[in-house]
Amino acid sequence: MKISHGFSESERAQIAALYWEAFGAKLGRVLGPRPHAQRFIAAALDPAHALCARAPMARCSGWPGSRPRAGRLVLGGRREMRAAYGILGAAWRGGLLALLDSDVDNRRFLIDGIFVAPEARGRGVGSRLIEALAQEARSGGYREIRLEVIDENLRARALYERRGFRAVGRRPLGVLRIVFGFRAATTMIRRLG
Image (cartoon, rainbow, N blue to C red; front, side):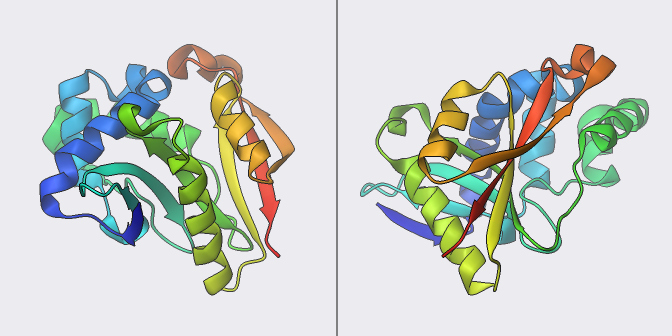
């Protein structure tokens, strides 16, 4: 398996579909329906904030987003939102997403999300991506990496704990849980040696 920066334009739709599969339960009520969400995500993806794990047959199998200082994997703005949802749909969706957004902690390398194609799960792809991100963080002078995992995603949390992350905080969503479909997110930190 080879891990490389970015992705090709021909991979956008596939990445958007995998992103939706991984995070659609969390974002579905806001970004749905699926065709609109995938159109928005595909337009908003920023290859500068992605690593891709490719199997020997060159099919991408996972993409973690990261925010070293500025930017993110899905960096869509008003233009991309309007193109997918129209003016009114973009306005209320953008407002709700702003409430969910976490702060950028410039002391730590922030991992926006990791997602792996179903056929590649359980094969160490997530672990390899985490280690590649840890190396990126070290190269950038960071001493810690940070991520957030929703409380309902026990499988992801177990992976992060196996890779050396520890929980340092929990952010309940309160009434927003009705909109986003999860109760809280746990912040996890891993110190880099």
